[in-house]
Amino acid sequence: MAGRVIYLDWNATTPPHPEVLAAMQAAAEVAWANPASVHGPGRRARAFIEQAREAVARLTGFDARDVTLTSGGTEANNLALWHAFGDENAGDRAAGARLHGALVVSRIEHPSVTRAAEALAGRGVEVAWVDPEPSGRVAPEALSAALDRAAAVAPVRLVSLQAVNHETGIVQPVAEAAALAHARGARLHVDAVQAVGRLPEAWTGADLVSVAAHKIRGPKGIGALAVRPGIRLRPVLFGGAQERGLRPGTQDPIAAAGFAAAARRALDGPARYAALAPLRDRLEADLVAAGRAAGAAPIRNGEGARAPHVTNLSWPGWRGDELCAALDLEGVAVSSGSACSAGTAEPSPVLTAMLGPERAASAVRFSIGEETTEADLAEAARRAARVLSRLRPVPAGT
Image 1 (cartoon, rainbow, N blue to C red):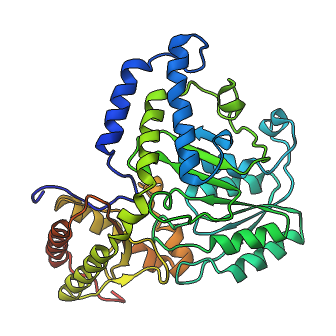
Image 2: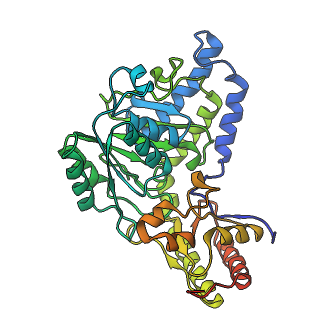
Image 3: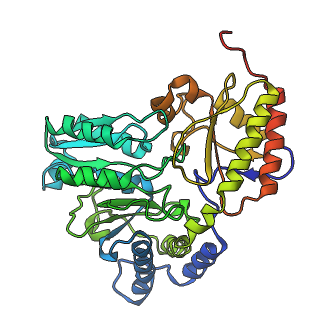
């Protein structure tokens, strides 16, 4: 490995902020009791749970009474999708009863949404899939057509659309999607995991919003689903009465303390991230130059409005996973797709839906954060040039 590690995978997870670590350490000294207990130590532990709920509510613009703490964004997304379908009797749902209604979802959602949608389809839900444009944007016109297709089969109960794509950073038309869904009597769920703390109000109009602490410099293993008043959620897990019976299991007040601290910091996050756009653009230019010098220029995946800290590039003649491994040996941490899909041999479903499997197979995502410096990116580009000089591209057709 050459020199110190340059971390350019902030979309996968963010390093916990010192304020978050301090809050968790302080909580660990006093919040060791079970927060469901009614005695004094239990009430002290529960206070940290409620503080996290209130901080998430303020960050998302929802009411604290309508924030459910989860194990992360994946559980929040599953809870959001499953809430809209099935009978009132949760036991019947768990036993495998057929479900009713229609769901509209794009093909570029996070796996925790697409896999949940596939599971719902297997239980009888009509799922209308929306293809993205080659730019990576889900066009409102395509959403409208999908709503019409779904409504011809069953009442549409839910539309699910992420605010910012996790691989390309492309910003999705959430406000337009909300208007289309509401006009047809459906609700809109927004996976805002990659948007909260990075873009302001990117979930405007949403009825349900998913958040993950570790994307905003908080701890892993905790997230939230915030919903509009009057929305009745149904559990996907069964057991205790924690979180009003929606997600049984002993809550972690120490993680909650970290989540609260991260959510408070994230209120000012969009301004910090906006300042990263020039650094991201410079990195793109340096990587393109390095690619050209090695015999094949990379191509950016995703056009139009995008988050200021992400670039996704395909490298003709190279494999994205091989480039990631080679960059890792040079001390540059990047990814070739969603961290939740790491270890699979298949190319990114997001980029495949946008641009086809060949382009997807050669893609690498670079995502920076508030601690990334211009010097970091210049050094990363130099190390990338060394990698590309060793791994010569294979000519097309060979």
